[in-house]
Structure formats: C-alpha cells, structure tokens
Amino acid sequence: MAQFKLFNYITIALGLVFWFCASAVASDLEREQRLIDEVEANLFSGELIMLNAQGADFAAVEMASETDSTRGAVILLHGRGFHADWPENIGPLRVGLSEAGWHTLSLQMPVLEKAAKYFDYLPILEEGVPRINAALAYLSSQEVSPVILLAHSCSAHMAMAWMEEHADEGINAFIGIGIGATDYQQPMQRPFPFASLTVPILDLYGEYDYPAVHRMAPERLQLIKQAGNPASRQIVAPGADHYFTGTSDLLIEEVNAWLDDLSW
Image (spheres, rainbow, N blue to C red):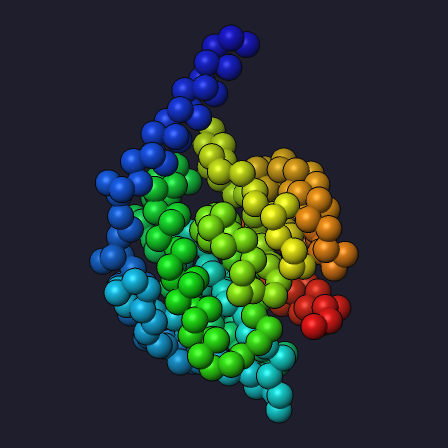
C-alpha cells in the first residue's frame, strides 16, 4: 500500500512538472498543418476559413444554418490529436447542428504528436484559450447569438482552461462531451471550474466511456449543481463509447434535445 501511494505521489509530481514547464513546450504546428490539409481535401459541407489568435492564424470550419432562421452559434472543439471535421464525432455533429438551425464554427485546436498523452498536453492547454477568444470575437462581429461552447475530450480541458480565465463571459451555454478524460496513472492536474459558471451546462458522456470520465462524474455533477442553473444536466448516452464510435446520430440527438429545452 505504501509503495502504491508513493507511486501515485510521484505520478502527480511528474504531472505538475509538465504543467509548470509550459513555457518550454509548444504544440506541433507541422502536424496541425497536415490535419488542416486533410480537412481541406475531404470537406464536403461547410467552408474552411482562417482566424487569428494573438497574431497567429489557425483554421476553422464554418457552416451556416441550413434552416430559414438561425438559432444561434455553436463553437465546436475536437478531441485530442484530431481535426475540426473528425468523421467519428465532431464532423457529423457540426453538420447535424447546422441542419437543426445552428451556425457552427468548428475550430482546429492545438495538437501534439499522435502518441502524446494527457500529461504531454498539460503545457499546451493554454494555447486553446486565444483560439476560443478569436472564435467568440468572430461570431460577435457577425452578430450571431446566443453562443454555445461545445468541447470533446482533451479540448474540454482546453475549454476549462479558458473558463479559469473568463468563467462564462461571452457564452450562453457549455456542452462538455467526455469531460475529464485522462490516461492511465495520469490524474487530472486542474480542477473542474463549473461552480463558477452561471450558464446552463450539459455534461454528456458515454455508457462505455473512459474510467476517469465515469469516476469523476459525481464530482462534476456536484459542481454543476453548486453552480445552480436549473437547465444544467448530466446525461449518460446508452451504448456510446468515449468517441461515440458508430453512434454519432445518438450524439447529435442528445445535444439537439438538450438545446431544444433551453430558453433564451
């Protein structure tokens, strides 16, 4: 037991070392460009655009509402190491939301090498913050509202880093999919900031999601309840895994159903 505790302490200490060395680590821009090229080569719905975050350009996929009226905008953040039109989940979701009347803006988020784990990503979580700010500024310039921030997996960590600085300023709701996903023996190093939010929160995860996501679900729910918005929900999607593999229709259905229940 003592050895197990010592191993956990060492694991946490290593995570903190990665975190505090953030200034020495940057995302993999070459791999990000390859992912953008993949999006551009396979994009069938929407338009690839470039946004600017603190002087650096990054890609996003924009798609206008396919209905007569626009219900608002959804900013989508993809999972770890993927791209803004990933076909398993974020791609079908952005299209499905557009078909339901939402203006969608799916951001390319910072990435590392394919084999990188949660601790590797700790130093670059902050790189997602200016990208979210740039997306909010872009939608504000188009006078599209309300604005929903939706993040899957690793990008939920980036969205939470943004919340640590801005709480819910500029957004009208937050949707987290597979929140709290980490890797084996790599516990979360930053707390959930949900108690500081006033907007509705949807905490959506799969029945067969990662153990860490399930293990921390009660903590997330407690903080969401502490925030006090009556429209907030924690929902387990039946039959779904962390990526909603083969169940993207269910993902779209769950997100749309929750959004339909919100009033602005």
